[in-house]
Image (cartoon, rainbow, N blue to C red; front, side, top):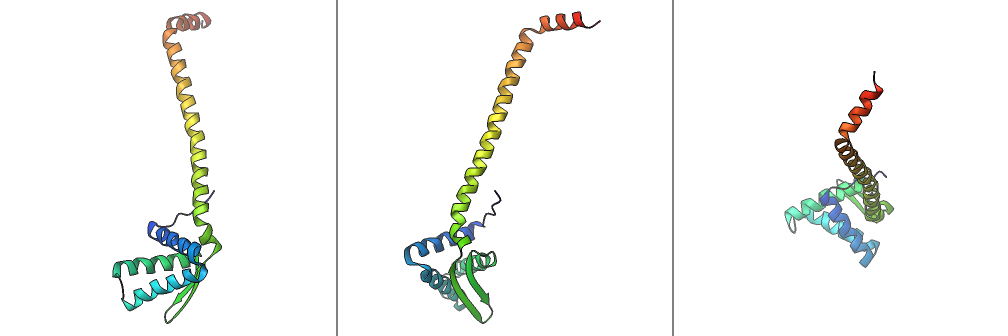
Length: 139
């Protein structure tokens, strides 16, 4: 399963938006985005948090996680898209799939190691008999 993880900053912001939508609905998400984006441009609030929110808003809008158009002098705020709402479910599914695939790889590696160890022990224990048998077969 192909899954593109978000940068941590954008993922945290998306989690916040998903939580806001679950508790307050889609309008609450649009209001929060508008508030954070407005705080960034007016310079109110924490400057570092404002910059972080603005980067996350732009990134999430560019990849289609939120329905938001930000252009100079004009901003249209929407809510989460279906892709944004399902991101964390998709991420969990991708992690389960990855673990399942790698669990099989570990089992194969463990089987190979145990089999090789057992064959090595038998080869060492019966080396003189094996050498005698091979020299008897070869001219």
